Amino acid sequence: MTQHLQRRLTSRLITFMALGMAIGTGLFLGSANSIMMAGPSVILAYMFGGLMIYIIMRALGEMAVHDPVAGSFSSYAHRYLGPFAGYLTGWNYWLLMVGVGMAESTGVGIYMKEWFPDLPQWIWVFGSVVMIGTLNLMAVRVYGEMEFWFTMIKVVTVVLMILGGAGMIWLGWGNGGQPLGLSNLWSHGGWFPNGVKGMVLALPIVVFAFGGIETIGMAAAEAEQPERNIPRAVNSVLWRIMIFYVGALFVIMAIYPWNQLGTQGSPFVTTFAKLGIHQAAGVINFVVITAALSGFNSTTFSGSRMLYSLSHKAQAPAVFGKVNEHGVPTRSVLACLACLVVGVLLNYLVPGRIFAMMMSILSFNTVWTWSMVLIAHFSFRRRYGATAFPLRGWPLSSVVCLAFLMFVVVMLGYSPDTRVALYVGAAWVVLLSVAYVVFGIGRRMNLAANDMNAL
Image (cartoon, rainbow, N blue to C red):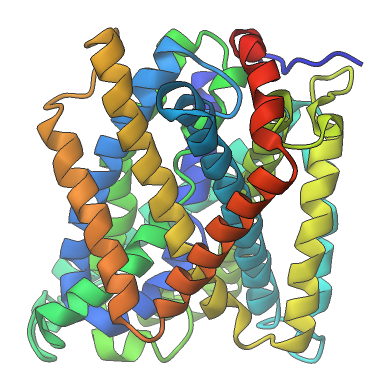
């Protein structure tokens, strides 16, 4: 067996991999929760959140173009902040990917019950684990192409919904020729029906919805011509987020009262029903299932690549550093899938709570990952200055973004529903720190440090 990944991912595939993570159950299912908290002001939360994500992606993109290595931000934290920082960041991200995989596979089970209400939810979750596991064991180009088509289904659906909704708002489509107008945006308690506090409390959910878009960095080690393809993918992030999140939610809440959306399942299904296309509910259900599968697909990819990178820095068992003849780290993929079986068990025990549980708990890991990107980037810029793909407005843009992430952490602790994220996150960091000392990981990493440039 060889020990190296292969560069088979084009700009098109990398871009759609990142979109596949961003346009997942966080939009199709999680948006209902954020709408109930903030009402129409959730649009402002997504706009601001999108701008912050763009800053993070530009910081990550600058480092990835300069040094497209496996492990991405974990390797950058290792190099620019020290081995311990890289170790914590890598394992935190691995846990995040496993947890998001559980949430996405749970989304599959929730939507499949729309068609098969008598079958238990866990069966569909298990089936998705088998399906996505098989896909990730294939050559990375095959995985990338499948992710492209998964994401294309979602993109077309969101665009059609925006266009159809706009026709209903301004032309009266499906409403007897009577335009609905925009009054629903302020007729049910105004733009801030739950006050500014409601919008602020929605920010952790917004953070989770964007989680996974950093797949762009994870894919850098397997990208064709990373110096060209990574910037293309990163630069497309902001406007795509504005279209798919802000545009979709604007249309949804304009044609349907916001305080009814969160009580009737996915806002996308109820919106198409409001448009008069009742027979399309099944089609939309299919779309959101592919959305969940797409996100699940990307988390398995990213989680396995992180394990691969950790093993090459002596931060994980060496067995995870092996790849097959197609450049796929099969043992890392299988290890991630074995952990995802826990999600199947949770869907058997608490099927009605697992999605909300994972949404809350994983916000801490997401904030940790993005914070480490920005902090590592500070050290990177001090060492190299502005490079070929610089973050504009640095260091002010990074300082503002870090302040935003710290604010999200405060909000996690403020809300009783999300406070558990801080407890679980702190416990995980303590556990990792103990393992670092007990197993002598620091000593082993010193021996592997000279091999980092070979990744």
